[in-house]
Length: 147
Image (cartoon, rainbow, N blue to C red; front, top):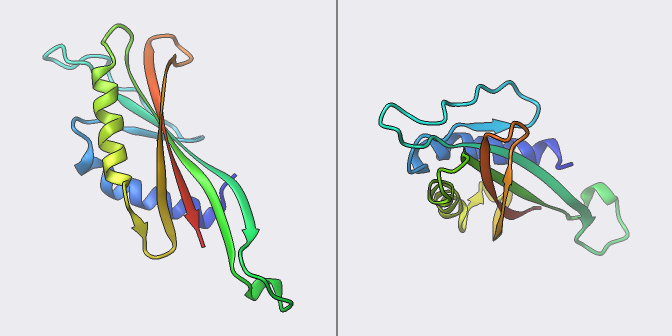
């Protein structure tokens, strides 16, 4: 679990930036929130995508050496921002890859107010289906560090 502070920084950044960065509409579903899936295809028979976002916290550790108050020492928190983008089954991987590439470009080199840095990007080449079996997706993982 990521800290509330890290989650809120990432959520604010993604919510503010993604609508303009996405190459086509791609609504995002955050964990444990109500979400209405888009129709699989639009009026022009183009596949519609949607994404599932998760924020993972891996480690919260002391970054400084000292014998003083632990609360006054430097602490670092690491984790991952995961996005799985889904398109209708049999629509091909290009719509998903376009969305994931745009998300990676949006996050590349970002420093969120000097409080959280987005770092390495990992593409998972393995596709997966959602719980209904009607949607196929791929995942991108972006490492982050908060000091």
